[in-house]
Image (tube, rainbow, N blue to C red; front, side, top):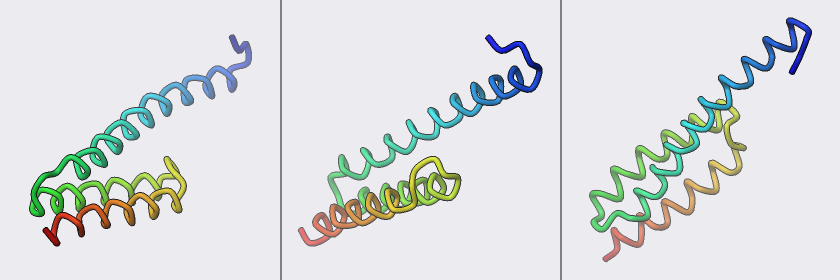
Amino acid sequence: MPRIESAKKAMRQGRTRHVRNRAQRSALRTAVKGVRAATTAEQADAAYRAAARLLDRAARKHLIHPNNAARHKSRLAAVVRKLVKR
């Protein structure tokens, strides 16, 4: 356990960030799964727009790397395109 006040504060901040990041990462993963689980083109399109918004926000806040967000968006868009073609 830290003894110095600044170290104690850093520990509190880290704990707070950890909880927030975990919740946001969980919501992000759920949104991505929603796109992959969609059965109709309309569902997939709506789920993709929500997931893309979350991916962009996560990249902007450095929760994930921007290239990671771009890669996920690209792959999800391909999934949506396949459903639209059916």
